[in-house]
Image (cartoon, rainbow, N blue to C red):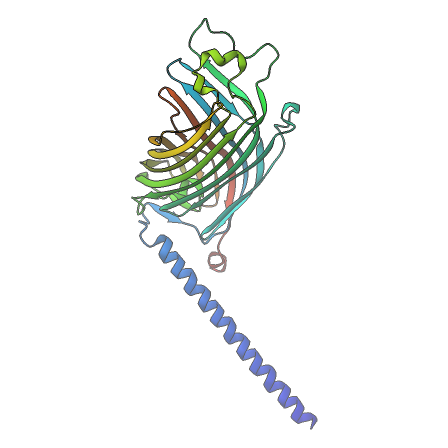
Length: 356
């Protein structure tokens, strides 16, 4: 009986081992099929003489980043303008890229923590998704606390804007900005959007592409009083005494981006992607009035330079996204945001390369 029991246990263990091995093979087969299918969808039309793809290699990088945003008001009839910005902080962190996924995780180090900005509140999410030909961006920003960055006065006889000792700090000004952006590279067979910005692809030869896309945004600004300092009220149109501004915008962009390959591994990427947007909204100065729905200018620029070697890569990215609107003839608010990032990273060998 003991012998029969041992035979039964042996058969059961053997059967389970065969089933487990079969399941493992099935899972490995499914994973291979998914990997080949995703590779086909993402990279099927790339010219390998121009683009090298290293998406199957895990890439890790160190990142330092600075985000910025501003709003400005231009009075072209009186040749004056005013610009507000919040405190800017330095962010440090790590990033990684593998297959279709790339993610940067950063944390503010508090370098802007001066006493005058102690009460500032902010949330700034700027997410980006790249493929070789598609670019998706989502922006969600909330800032409370701005400072008068600078003003331009073209009349030498005009009085100074701030009294002696005034800092131009406005703890009451709050902004919200929500934006969705999509761009498409028409020459995706020879030009890669990922190469200069994600760096899990390499642009082997210089190439460029026309870029087309569209965007939606919603911007609001609120303050307890006019954004124009009291001593500067006479320098601006009376409609410039804004304490509230709301703008909904829908637009299209068309421009060009080019990557110049220098030597074998160095690169410079430059772009100019202008557009037009249709907007509507309202403002208070101090009475609430509707903006005349109209069309105005929008601009996107994504630029980079760096070194993209077989294993080590490093570089600097700078992006800008902004638009103009019109309150009345000669009075134009401008809203913009972007970020600057510096990074250095390393690509690890894939499992296939290690085993080979």
